[in-house]
Amino acid sequence: MRVSSTDMQNNFGKYLKFAESSEEIIVTRNGKDVAKLTALSGGDDILIREAAANYELSCGSVTYEEFLELAKTSEQRFELIDGIVYNLASPTYKHQHAVQELIGTFYNWFKGRPCKPLTSPFDITLKKEETNICVVQPDVVVICDKDQIDANGKYTGTPTLVVEVLSPATRSKDLIRKLELYRACGVMEYWIVDPMKEQAAVYVLADGEIADNTYYSNGKDLYVESERFQGLRVSMRDLFAEF
Image (tube, rainbow, N blue to C red; front, side, top):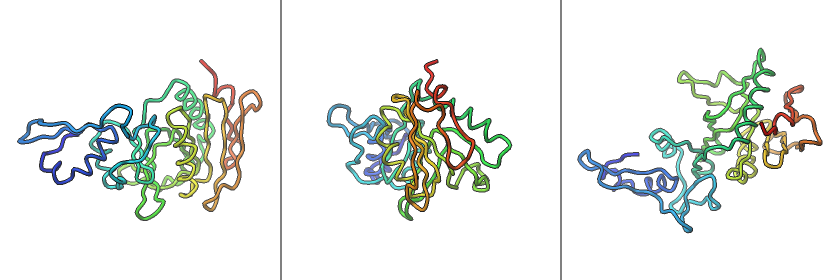
């Protein structure tokens, strides 16, 4: 991201947040690059990255408007949850294999039906509160309110079903922060797929609460099954196959 020295001087706090999100800030003067703002690397850094143990920003929460500016001007992918920016790391083979199996099964099952499965990258904007707007890119979503796609192709509704595939870097966020986000914002069903443990969990969400949850394990269960969409199921063996 390139910003003028005047803009940097007037909005240093904002750009410091962006730098902490691992965005490189190039400062320009009279059209020339004169400085660079980057987060320090080492044991004491607090970058907001998927692998970071500490997700707290030192200079306050990022607003939804600031996040949009960051996402628009950066080549990287980010999520915003409760004012905290997360840099989306590159996924592993097992992660992508599981996503491919999920979207393949979902595509075939939903074909000809009113709901539509989509895969990341695809922004989902959820409003927890008037001043707390979150933006996430789930691995797979099923949307049944296609009328909520605006003239620019942006989706402004709430998915009926969301799937997140865990990786070592995203485990805590997907298990805790995203479960809370989806519960609070009206998602009806949340799948958490764990390729490392070869397990899956299906949460049924209703009225802001966890109404039910079911756990599946490869070798014990043949399929992971949807509660909301009766008949939708994914082979556990295929989901966690090595090749």
